[in-house]
Image 1 (cartoon, rainbow, N blue to C red):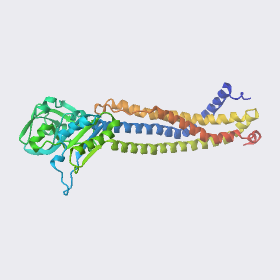
Image 2: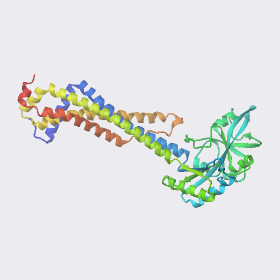
Image 3: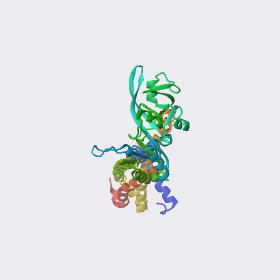
Image 4: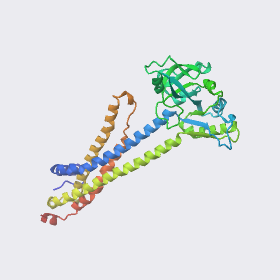
Length: 413
């Protein structure tokens, strides 16, 4: 005789019978769970990969320069040649600072190709002049020595910083800081060695073998003092589109109408990266859902076989008074246990992978600071979707078992 419906005794009996049935066929239950393990693990890993990718992209863009806007003169065609007055000047930098309140810093650069002689061999390098504020905007990583201070900029000091690659080329035995390097007719004292923190999507004047100097020294080589690339740092990321438009307007109003300027930001790159990340996430989630659907079909098939094998058991239970709901809930509980246990195993595996990677990364100084986030929302989502799949596909065999007639079930061989 079954316990009254919807009571603790009723549910305890249902869970006990379902658990006993699964224990009686351990191998079958484990193989059925395998699809759920894969599907639920895929959901968690997909979201984890998407979050890690998004974090990496944002980190890359922030490494190029936080809230960066950059501008340059578009070189005109032969029919409309550009004039020297069209070039971006230091006065333009000051005008942007004054007229665009959202700009917290502005800087300019100009690079020229030149060469240095090392062991009687001439090597091409990139000489880059930078104004004050360049380090704040670009946030270069200083490996040894220091960056330019205000006195270096104002006093026209012949000092420089070298990229790590150029420092190794010119000073193979080390000790670049404090030594001199000759570029053309001038000797510069090396005060620091640096590298760019991360890739800059091609938006950089700094190459592998570059040397940066105070901007005023560039005039010694070129005879002019205009800016090739102009950088501005917006106060907030939300201000970047507005700052981009305002800088373009300032440049246009300060120069002749025929001059054309390209003012851009990294928002487009970020948006494209987000769209690609979203598309890949959707594709991977669809694959995970397909895996869950396949596992759901497997659960349904196994449960249908189970119902057929246990027809006499169902008939006996009904004959001694078990209601239809008791049979229905018992088989639904079995489906839930298969899908729920599989979901938990899949989630544990999926969570353990990024956590293990984070632990391993901590042992390698070169990649420290990199972490793979785990979204606990994806964990809940994977569990709910997996269990729902088990219940959905388990309902048909459970309903079939519940609708069996006791007399026919007892006659079943």
